[in-house]
Image 1 (tube, rainbow, N blue to C red):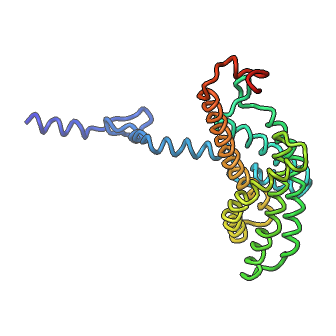
Image 2 (cartoon, rainbow, N blue to C red):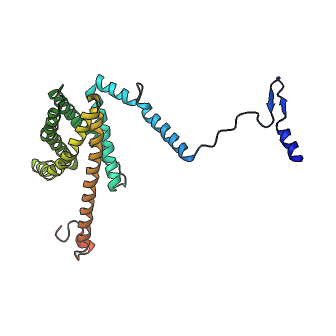
Image 3 (tube, rainbow, N blue to C red):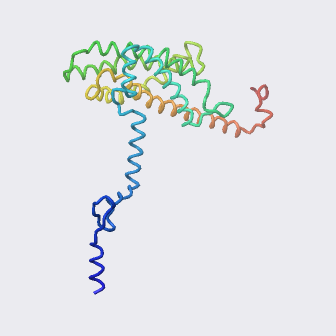
Length: 266
């Protein structure tokens, strides 16, 4: 009997003061369920992406950068290349744990690389890519695309890599023609092998999916990643060679007095 009374009392309706009857215990919709942690993470990642790219919309950073490329292409490329070259050097030093005498990763090579990127790499890349695009303008056949890749790998890449190695030798301290030539000869083929692997893939991707006005930032990004890897790898090898030389010097049987400059044959 008490159970029947309980059910009837649940169905009793009352007025909310405005003449509208409401059911007891049903004053509004139920609260939404708590958001899952995964959904919260995805929402946060989406917000970060929107903040960084602004959705790549008409007012986004990419649209602003492409507009600058159209209005003042060479200056925009110089600022971009200089900034990326300096950042590349800093990241490579950090990855390889290559510090200066003060224990900092911001070495004197960082501003030198910025100068190289702005005043050597950017103008050269601007001229080479412009000539390549003009040479194959309006030619969209598969044969033309393959020919464009061949010209890029056999003409454009060797010139850019030779200039890069020459600049790196000068930044590293080479002052004579023989020192620069030795550096270029030692590093040319290893760098070219990397270019021959990555350049066709990057160029084919750009041909298939990217408009020509976005080729510059795309190739800048590819060069930044590859250059950082090569730079860090080179620094690690140099540091390993210095450590081996230091260990061999400590194990040659001489005292620290005999090993000091001006003594023992130094």
